[in-house]
Amino acid sequence: MTTRRIRGTAAVVAMAGAVTACSAPSDGGADGGASAGSVVIGVPSEPDTLSPLLGYGKDGNSKIFDGLLARDADMKLKPALAKALPEVTDGGRTYTYTLRDGVKFSDGEPLTADDVVFTYDTVLDEKTNNTAKSELDAIKEVRADGDDKVVFTLDYPYAAFAARTVLPVVPEHIAGGQDPNTGSFNTEPVGTGPYVLTGWSKGEKLTFKANPDYWGGAPKVKKLTMAIIADDDVRATRLRSGDLDGATLPPNLAATFKNDDGRKTYRATSYDFRAVSLPTGNPVAGDTAIRRALDLAVDRRAMVDKILDGAGRPAYGPLPVDDPWYAEGIDRPQDLDEAKSILDEAGWKAGEDGIRAKDGRAARFTLYYPSGDKVRQDHALAYASDAKKAGIDVEVESATWEVIEPRMNRDAVLAGFGSTGDPDFGLYTLLHSSLAGDGFNNMALYDNPAVDEALDAGRRSQDPEDRKAAYDTLQRELVKNPGYTFLTHIDHMYVLADRWKDLTTQTEPHEHGFASGPWWNVEDWQPAT
Image 1 (tube, one colour):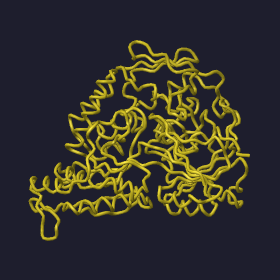
Image 2 (image 1 turned 180 degrees about the vertical axis):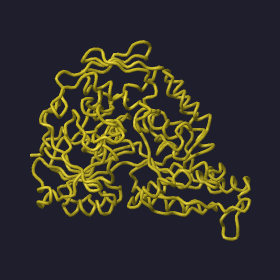
Image 3 (image 1 turned 90 degrees about the vertical axis):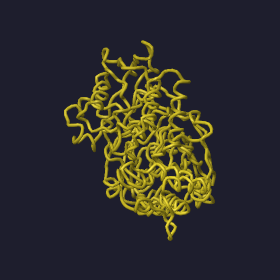
Image 4 (image 1 turned 90 degrees about the horizontal axis):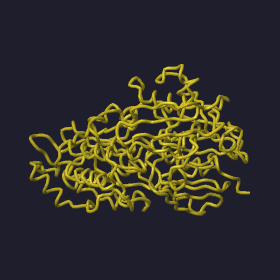
């Protein structure tokens, strides 16, 4: 088996949603078995909705839809529904796009500038339940100039705005007559993309067929099915049995396929980090001394070596150590002596059992991780072990997200985040106090005025040096008072049957599954023989 490590330059991609099937690709299963034009992929999760109006595919690669722009293998912006990259005028406050000729939605209706305006206006509408709308905060107005031109006017120059226009465009003639929060478009989408949804069995699979009239050319993979398999071990077992053509796997499980004939392993670098959220309102996890001690108590290098089998990097903050925006000098090794000293000075004194206490309260809190996620489980257990060496008792529990979500504003969670490209894309929603407790945005309820100021400066400044200074300040503030304990950045591993060529990977965000991985460009695949 061949292993390929493919790196792209940093930028924005994301999940177009995990999707698909549970039938066997090679044994004539419920979906009719594999054929030369059929692919079945196992992924760990599925989207809550298939509507871009609620956030689906907001970072590109949605397969059902297209944005004005897209990303190539090296993560550079390229035209998609637009003929060319935007014309930028008025000092970075006006972006004008000209639409590609002859593009139609999968129902045969033509794409127009009004569809683009409708999409952005609806996302920004306060009545629309889109938790990512703050990402489009800079937009003052979007208007159509005839049928083929769209003009965005911004409140302030936003250096990374063009990358936001990978947002999928939806048809006004269908979605416009529905409530964006509850309408049938959420499960019965129509777009301009290379694939058309043919079925969605919640919790089991999503199936797609190739769009024969796709403006980019009809895909050779005619049927795409993605099985929703939350448990890592089960996903690996089904791949080994031939029930799947490919799957996303944690590094230790991907390594078990290294000697398999007929399969290839792909390794994608990513901005995907694992971290422990430390909610501000938790009387122990929200204590600054506890947070600082935990930050020094963890052995990040051991986590990379033992849990990730070397497929990753220590995380000293939300940005990877090799990112150009990474702040020099914030690397910090495990230092249990310093961790204990911080706790002693703050009044957290060790008891007879070794667990510290202050004012009658034990240094103890619960840490949840999602059931079936072996990588998060191993991170959580290693974290708890390291914390105990400093006198902090972390009680690890597994649960479903239905159980975790109501608790995550007061209990710690082994979380995963990370966005490729501009630092604004991932850091603002992770840390800005205005988004505290807004779904998975700022789930630690982190509130640091210096960080807010840096985030606002980084978003609004056009000067690269000023932006670099702002994000340097932010990262150093996180060392002083970490709202999360950042642990590792994870390389994504995929194993896939060797039946196709022209497979590559991109540098990936946290979200991976349907949109990312070698299948990010499945519409371009060609049969191997």
